[in-house]
Length: 84
Image (cartoon, rainbow, N blue to C red; front, side, top):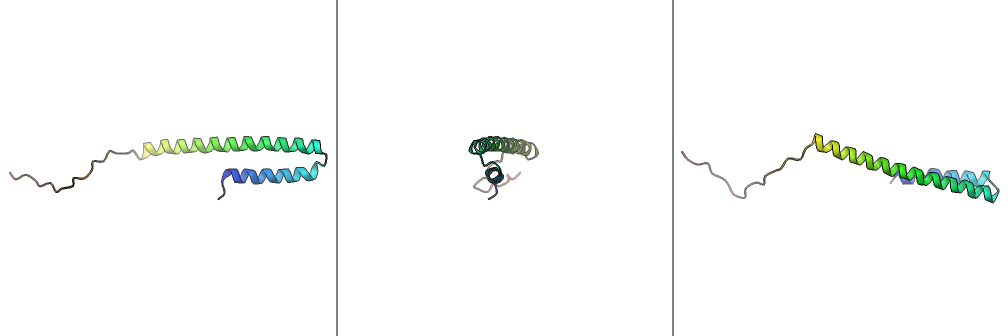
């Protein structure tokens, strides 16, 4: 529900709303919106890179801590011990 993109977009939309009230000049308002859009793209890139790095780290660590053992499948029949 609350992804990093959702949180970033919420904050950036709030910034745009504040910029609309502060900058009444259209040229300055457009410049502020362009700056906020650049911040949004940068924040989303950092977020994605961080999530990819964390996923890779956790996957690598879990392979070390919980190594996958090769399991032999169980025989479909009962094996009797040989009599001596």
